[in-house]
Image 1 (tube, rainbow, N blue to C red):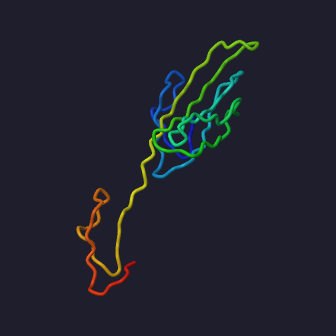
Image 2 (image 1 turned 180 degrees about the vertical axis):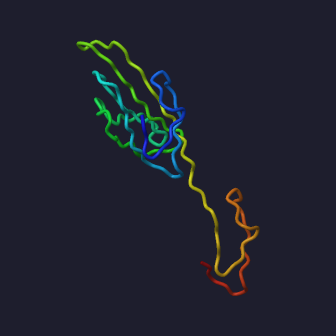
Image 3 (image 1 turned 120 degrees about the vertical axis):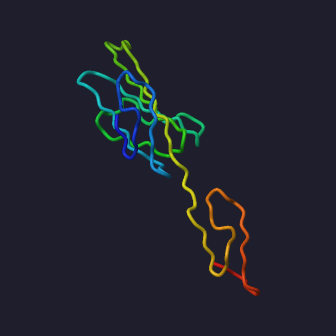
Length: 141
């Protein structure tokens, strides 16, 4: 399994079923590529969406070795891949792999005013400031 963008941990192992997928700040979409050994397997990919408060089927009978976009992502969403091996319509084995998404939230890095002087200095963890303006100032950028 590979993601673009994204870095899964631990590295994929067919006997490991739960993963963490680290994505860059503000990522809203990633391409999911699932690979397999030769043989008949069926793949279903779902997106457990916190924003939609629902599980969305991305594809059933998904193509292997093909990037499949999963979008509308937010932190703590899950991408779920269910792999099924069937013989003559009977399920022989089914396994589910889950990637929990870690997406840092975008934050302000600075705030400046012209004219004006904010105090204290900007800090992303602080939410209240005092803005000193010259007498008669009616606007600031």
